[in-house]
Length: 262
Image 1 (cartoon, one colour):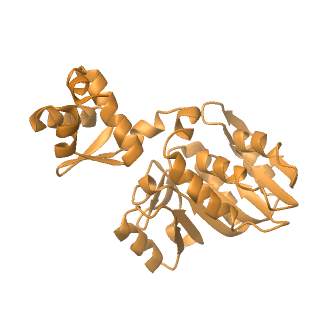
Image 2 (cartoon, rainbow, N blue to C red):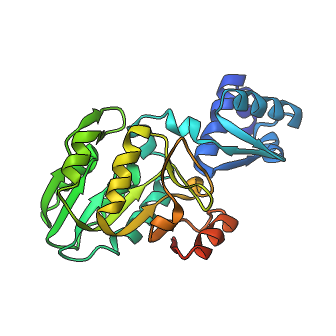
């Protein structure tokens, strides 16, 4: 789109494009947006203030950062399209940590689905999951010997199961590794999720494995969300991106957690 056409955008279209940039880049600056849209910095600040009032971003000095309230309101399909490249890199690294014959618990969320798609070389795997999407995906992989989809209450919008039935079934098993996605990873508040109904199941997953691997793209590092899963000291490895907040990453490493940045 040309600069002239950018200038012709109405306020709703312009704000939608600002949110699109936030979803892609995680952060925007007033001065850059002013140049991009060919409008004053005062107008851009008004846009950012309005979006913040609606809980769609968080204002910082000179710009704004993405807030996961907007991400949380996306359905599963839309989340799959967010930060795809970052999630794919994380998935490749996570898959490299899975060995032939492993029993692996996979949590719900989009990044574990990316991980399953990278399990092409490993043989004789047993997969346990509460993710409907993961269970469907592994059906196409002949190297996966057994797939267990935990029964329970179904969240159709976000494609996972939870509840007492899922926990009861999970407690019958022991696994080598857990690939756990989260909505926030913080050195202070630990691993958190927006889905409070799933938090207890996630805690039990951590208790049933030898090694917990948390997969979280850079936008989730340093954030905390609604429901606490476990303290950061309860995980063994964090896989994120090189552009994750350095201070938070260093603080997590200082707690003895292995961190892999891709």
